[in-house]
Length: 88
Image (cartoon, rainbow, N blue to C red; front, top):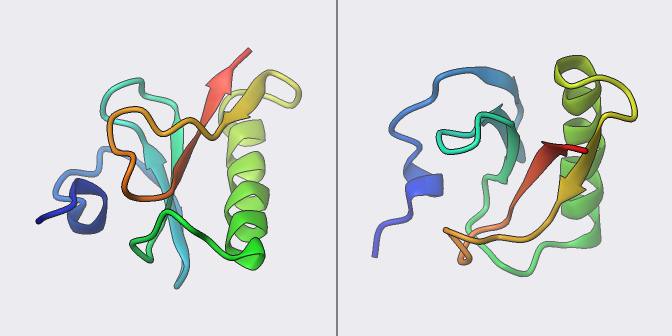
């Protein structure tokens, strides 16, 4: 079964990328979206910390300090860890 987050066929705006994560503009809600590159629903504590700290940095740049929250609810794609920085 293919995973749209693993394949990432379309990226409108890439904010950050390294060996563990990428942060881009979400196709649906146009907010910063952090995706763990490893396909899993059980990330390590390191992976969660890395993903959240970098998403906070991007969220502050894009949305403003204190103007967003990290949303960990995976609605459309529950099989692959991804978090959004959503405006308050």
